[in-house]
Length: 303
Image (cartoon, rainbow, N blue to C red):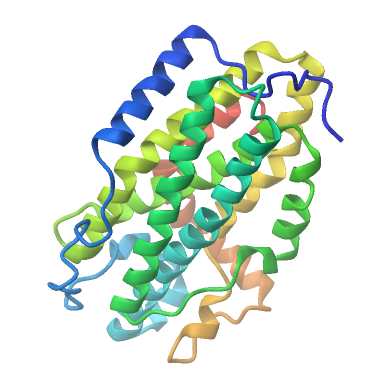
């Protein structure tokens, strides 16, 4: 059920935020991501260089990392990158349906600039999915399973259509923010394969606009909605925050793709938790996700 906040206009922005949306619209129209030019696809991928920093590997700093050969460690870094790219694809295929759905459902109530940006947002996400699918093919990497196959994820997302639109916007905001902070932290370095580094950088230039839009929508809601509604929103996303933190630290499905006997099997829950909460990964998460955690703590999503 929808919360008690009025849906006469489900996305209410203050004057400052409306100016921000217009800036985002203008920026999107000035530079469109062109699939054939975003990276030099003909140059290809330099597999002598890693796709991400070694120290951002999921098992790095644990006994399991020490057991692997250099070749196995390199393979793991590429498989982890395939997961990141796959998650981008699954998210960005779903977002246009969600946001165009809001446009169709609340067309007359939405402010023109908000309606336009939701459409621009959707167009850009479609281009991103095409880019990432081309990357997987170029890197000879397999697509990972849809996150909806994870029970706690699917049960969480199934509730969103019956809730106020801010729930859908906040959830996708958190997913995109986690994904972006992770990708930029681990790829924007000279030692990384140039095509991989460039692709994530160009993607980031558009995603920062998406994140800014959603962030403003959610913050306006927190300022204007009744306290009971904002408290319910924060409570709802506490589990979502923990889920994203854990999934961006370690994903058990990697064992299915590895060409070698991967040191942790999907059902080894004790080992998985040990890795997710290793000293190294806690320090890594504190560094790369600091801005997200601080924001979530400000709004009661994190205690």
